[in-house]
Length: 297
Image (cartoon, rainbow, N blue to C red; front, side):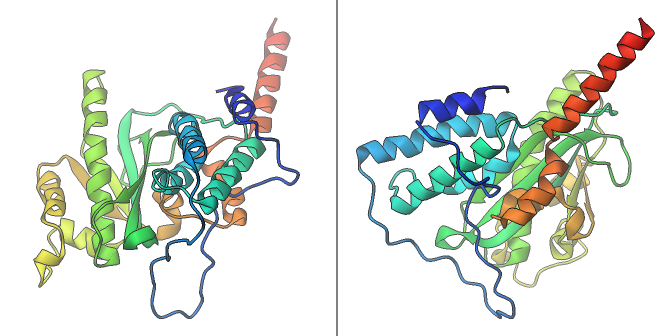
């Protein structure tokens, strides 16, 4: 979407940062050796006036369209800021300006798709107690691939980055909640692909939590089933109907992890090429294509 970010910066009268900003949202530093994980406390900054509240809402609305269409790296930051847009504070304004700095540093996001067998596949992940009020976040990365045991990654056709409304009592329950949200989002995509003439086998969904996988496959029976929200057992029903195929792979291979939490700048820099294609690479491919056409002519 060329010039979209530049026009947004002009609209919000936001100047380009002096230093490149590679982090769309501040992250929580890792506390090595910590035995307990606590939810982040609410900020005590003064609230913004009506004009400031409208500014936050406009920034969220403008960048959300761009993030959903192209640049999925902004989704987690937008989700966290959007939860505070009803009662924004000075800290919320700082986070919005940091997001605009990130957009100005990376204005041209490019998604590259490879030819495939049009089989929908996805990665599901969750972060436990990563949001305010002891909430967790679900992340999903959906793409089109071949019908293989472990589908190869492709350009994202759908990216899910949602805060789970219910408070999860464990990391395994958060993973189940994320699987429920992602599978629910995948069903309309399955129907659309089938109507387009691409029959869909059981949609492969990757998870990195063995407990959640065991609950879905009915190999683990929790002693206290009420601890797991009953709607999450909808996954068992869909698994038996051969609508989904859930499998386990190690965490570093799960692309859904990226949108479940706020990362350090070095992680954004290293992982961004997995989701978006650098502009210089596209320019090089176009140059080679033009040279090939001239030689053939």
